[in-house]
Image (cartoon, rainbow, N blue to C red; front, side):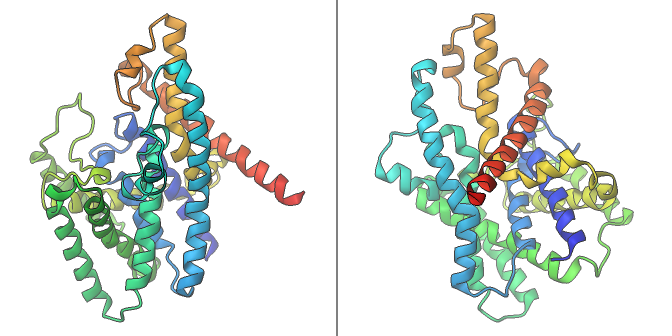
Length: 351
């Protein structure tokens, strides 16, 4: 892979994970482009950008299993121990009952078997989506027709929302919706990047106008809500048959636009590059860090932990005052936690 492209991917991943963490704190990192309108699907797009046809199926499967599922399994084991360990202190078991079905099947269906690593739900989903995309890629048809087919499949997936209460249907829905964006990422790399300039200010104007029009129809525009134009892919919740696709496209485009125009300012920022290199660890650990901050504040102020336990895992203390403290602290700690894990891994390999 060309080094400049690889570095831009790293900057893109850094921005993507910042958008995700900001979304979990209910604020938008990019004005007009709410995180829940594109935050997760951006990672499917990035995976498509990195898709490589040269590997046979078995080799591709092994590579994706090693990069995605092995760390996931290790994190699941670690967080199962953490969840048991903190239960006596928090007074609540943050997860589903531990049994074979919940630990081995639910990760692929909902990914919410353990609350503290619920943001990692998309890893098994991404893994299975990429494997299916690899299989479908063996069908030789014109790329334009393939793109239209994936778009139709994505639209059909949205119509399946009433059936998403069935976890097997939910998995199928998420896969069908995501395939289109994996394919778009692949098309971007193969047919657009370095060949066509789609990041000029004329297109920016069009994107902003489209986003402004979408806001007119926004059913969740109250500033205190902080999200708006959202769809919840993890649970297959969509409010409109086409808006989720449009907001995904505008969100992906504006993120790529930021990378293209600010890359020269970000590429030499060492910490920012570390963020891009540790997105997996940030995704896995930021909710734990948020909860450590919350319980610490409650303990200092003498507030019973029941205040937290009556809420969900994303609840945090006094958001009007603490949001950005949670954000900065969470990013810094989880980034360097990832660096620490990589140091340990290298040390073990050397020995």
